[in-house]
Image (tube, rainbow, N blue to C red):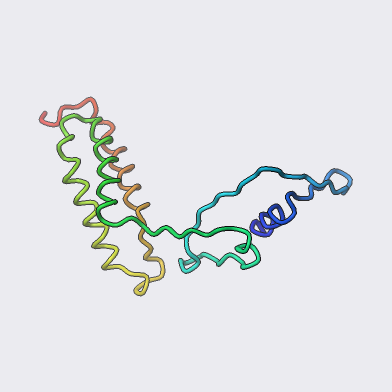
Length: 146
């Protein structure tokens, strides 16, 4: 339904709004762009977008980042996070390397061919970073050695 509504807005530059009493009023849209992101329809629970809709939009496929990019991205996150506890700053690179290595090994070991719900994305590592951040937040005021 949402895709049909978007298609109507793109094809007709607007949509009909029902007013009280059942009267229809056309709402015109000008200089509007729709930008979206979605997973491929091959992922579990996803449905392909219709060709009637896709004929109106350019589709750009961006794959997940590789190992080098993951280390750069999550190294930045981890360095920023570990600044909260100065005595942990030196662990940012080893933590990043371990996270990326574990993520890639798990992704290789547990495939969708084994179980359809084995879907790995960098979102998993983002959740780890947020979890670690929550865990170390109370350490901001504690000394690691004591």
